[in-house]
Image 1 (cartoon, rainbow, N blue to C red):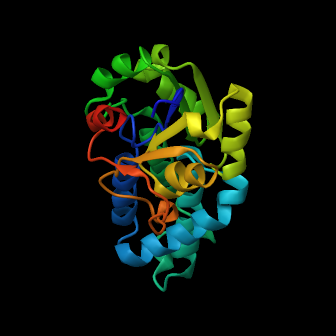
Image 2: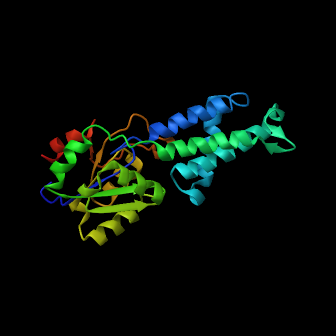
Length: 238
């Protein structure tokens, strides 16, 4: 801890709510297609489409919306009672409009900061350089950062397509710090903890209420910290 110079924070579901809005959108999506498929089967179909599209679309609300549309087209076209939504081989435009509305809803939701965020950042800023390391759509992440009111606390913002070991190594080289002088704080073991430990950094896991399947992984063997809420980070640093 005496060597620590920079603390990195994940953004979505670490500093503010995010996954909650995607889960609510999927619940509405399931209601929209309830005459064609049950919610569990729909979830599996949607996840498969998201994984297929990820190399092309990446993460974020816009990528998610495109995957919702593709899943709906696939489900409705393949359903025995597809005639209810099809007219001359075309999907009812009302369904597409409703799906686009789900995407707009995710993009326009207010920023809801998670507990302790506003109280802990000023304390940490007085002791360390703070940065954000997040992945997703650049425009969406920039919008959320701006609306959050948290930008003054951060020395650097890094928006990446993925969080791999090489991304972190490159970031630390540009910030001119050694891995041992860096700590990453986030809700994902796969993205925020494991790659940082693998390059010799420190990591703190703050589990979210639920975790997307894509971010799930086995617990790392290397030691790391786990806290229930962000305010407990001060105890870790002490």
